[in-house]
Image 1 (tube, helix red, strand yellow):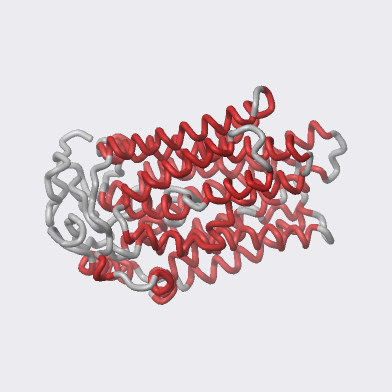
Image 2 (image 1 turned 180 degrees about the horizontal axis):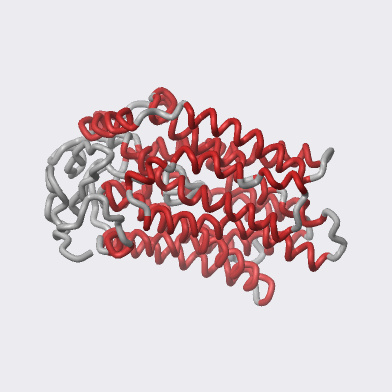
Length: 482
């Protein structure tokens, strides 16, 4: 960005942004990528995601080739979700105890080694599944540390755009990784794809080591107690704080209704469609529409809409996400279904980065990694439960009716949550309190608190690392992104 102060220049404590632009001018992608450490983290995140999806696709093919068992092949894919559900918050609490960069590097190196082991020929399938599970255990602490690291790198005004960049990149990496992994596995050898994933994790570690400077741990040894107690403190912080609970509740509830078209796409495509090739095309259209909408919504709203307007759009976008799927009640053709799913994705992509930003700004330093895991685990459970519930309903009723009525319930629930949405002043007070509770320069981590800001005028933070900011995620990269 033109006129930016150097990375070592502290933030302006008050007044207009030091770069001369108006407080309400939307942040550009150039503004975000002007931060050197963010560029390194973004590239590391990109190759990490590609490696992850590459490995997942190839491992399912490898297991199926070895066993010819659909169940075991599916199990090898589902293992990736177990760490978040079984022990995500506990594992993420470790990220608060050690420097974030070190946590991310160790996780990448461990996944590199374990994926290399998976690629070894003649490894028994049972051992292979164990190794895959061990590799996936690195995901919660790594992603939690990455989420908590962004506030130390980016200022408040850049973070929403950075989160939109991360989430849209995640969608593209997912498509590319799955496609490349399945193609290489089927056409060449699944072990080659797994080996490439191992290399990707190693490259991610190198990018972090070379481009991100080390910082102290979020908590000192004197602040630590039993790991289970620290994990419980994360749950208490998220669900015991009215502001955090409101943001997290809105985000998690949104996923309950947004995930359904993807979860039921295979069954939806088969209804009234006897041709297998056409069914596959229709299923792909429905499943791809959501991520495409995410990209559109994330780019348009986070990049081109002023910060104060984004705040006002939270409630209408929350209702719009399930509302877009209500016309499924009329059993429209697949093209219309894909369009409805895309529109729902636009609302999600426009909403979640803003919620993500507000959530972590209201978190004091030392809780971000644990809070990330709490929300991420809640989203995994919510999405899995929603797909299971609607799948059971679809055994007894047509899929369009199930999706339509499920979305009607979503509109009512999201409208109720929107009606109880806290006033802007409560968010500003929570952000100010989080900044005050975070360490100052010379404490546990180098930081410059971001001053409290009233909604109409957002100030540009300097590029010096600080202790308040925004994490990412819908997962992957942001606190509220899976």
